[in-house]
Amino acid sequence: MNILVTRPDERGQELVDLLQQQQIFAIHQPLFTIESGRELPLLPSLFSQLNEGDYVFAVSKNAVDFAHQTMTQTGFKFRSDLHYFSVGQRTATYFAGKSEQAVKYPICFENSEGLLELPEMQNIQGKNIVILRAETGREFFAKEAVKRGASVQNVECYRRVPSAENLSEKLSLAKRVGIDTIIVTSSEILASLIENTVDEDKDWLLSCKLIVIGHRIATIAKQSGWGSDKIVVSPKADNQTILAVLTELQ
Image (cartoon, rainbow, N blue to C red; front, side, top):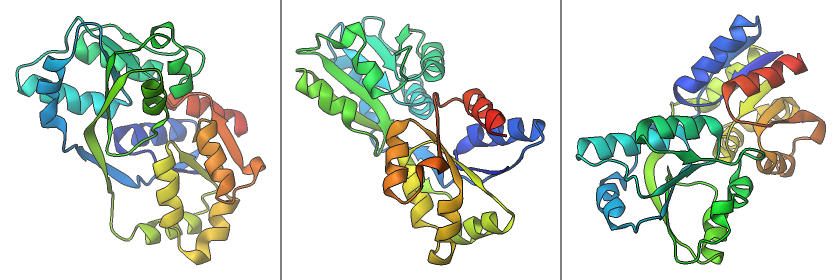
């Protein structure tokens, strides 16, 4: 098993290091770099306008990092009279540490559907919900919250920028070194992977096993040409869970 890790930033390199400790060949080729978002300056004013009991939802550690940095630099703190949420345990723990507030998350299903099943989400008529996120992302939670009567505002805390020139050549190199398994942790990464693979390498790409985070990405992969036998769904997005999935496959 030869693995391509596309997860950006230090978490991608951390996963490569964990795999190499298990004597599994892996290379790190992020498809994006992460930069600060254009709407970060809005945060202090936005937080001050929220009502007691309103909700703040962070989609990732990147969103938490940039939001916390902005709040700190402007002399603001995360208000103690608001409710804080995240999709996964790891992000929730990280968010709690940065915000110094309790952060709730769904235990059984770490996704938007699980978040919407939390007791706190059953009566949100009139609530204001701020979503700390990237420039794009899944809209399901926001749309469902609006249907339930909440007012939702997305805040672009970070943005994804193509990570390198000659990305198609780097993916061709991955083919030549024998990569047969690819870690895909977002639909944006999957789209970039397809877009930056040249036509003569498409058969190789579709022959690779994909380790994806969640059934939604698995569905997109199937629609893009991967067979069901080539797709493995990791139950959670953290590196330790992905490592366990890969170790079992090996």
